Image (cartoon, rainbow, N blue to C red; front, side):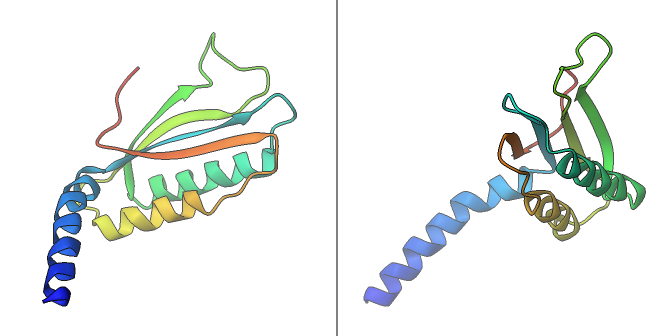
Length: 122
């Protein structure tokens, strides 16, 4: 009886969280300096991972929020959104997200990868 109860609880948790993952077909990416120098190697790696994803159609929509004309931060960095390509499986897009999350910039550089339903024009 205890196993059945545990199974029901786990099933309920999975059924609640599954739609969240299914709806996340985009990712917001931001990297920048906390006040010191920016980890340029990490920034280049982020750009390479995104570029490869665009080149292989893993990402169809890529919107850069910053830097833009008139809004270039002194320290540099990037704020953008990448949305899954048409017909790309969740597994393929999740590999892209894992690649982004595997990047670890040096101290003094912030880096965020956040799932979202879709990219929005700001």
